[in-house]
Amino acid sequence: MKKEFVRFQLEKFTILVGCLEILGGVGLFIGIFFTPLLIFSSAGLSVLMLLGVLTRIRLKDNFIMILPAFFFLILNGYLFFKFM
Image (cartoon, rainbow, N blue to C red; front, top):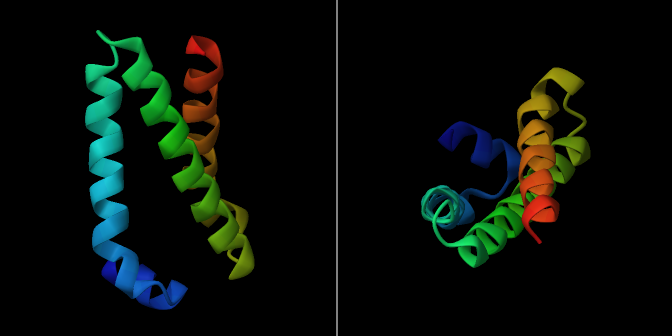
């Protein structure tokens, strides 16, 4: 993963992105019992995945490389709009 951030020229954001992903995942889990946290976490992860998709498009990666981030963008977007 570290090599990918170097390729993206975003190596200074590696720890920030990792922390945000972990917090988002924990927020989704706790959000099962507390819906406002689920909404906030799914929105944050959607934004994070959108930025990931845009970064991969900017680097002209192929669709297979974009697919995981795009899948999680759609999944978190769905959770956001379903529970909003």
